[in-house]
Image (cartoon, rainbow, N blue to C red; front, side, top):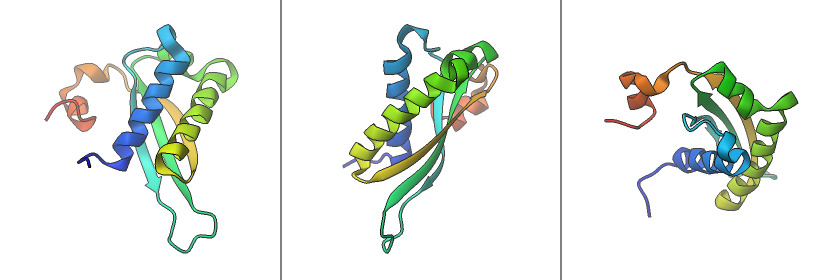
Length: 119
C-alpha cells in the first residue's frame, strides 16, 4: 500500500526511462509531470489508459538533448516508458510525451513547491 498517486508512479517510471536511455547525456534538471491521466471506462471493450506527460528542462540546449535528432530520443523514451507503464498498470497505455523549457525552475520556490520538492 502507498499514499502515492498513479500519476506519481507514472512520472517516476518515465523519469527512470530518461535515465536509462540518455545516461550521462541526461540533464539532471529534468522534471516529469503527468498532465492528463484518463482511466478506461468499465464498459470499454478495449481498456486503455490515456496519458499525457511533459518533460521539463531548464534550457533550450537541454531540450535538444532530450528530444534528439528528429525527435528520435524522446520517441525511444516514450516506447520503453509505455511498455513499462503497461506492465505496471496491467493494461494498454497510450502515452503522449512533450518536452518543454521551464527556465531555471530549480531556483524558483513556487515551482519547486508545485513540483512536490518542498512543502
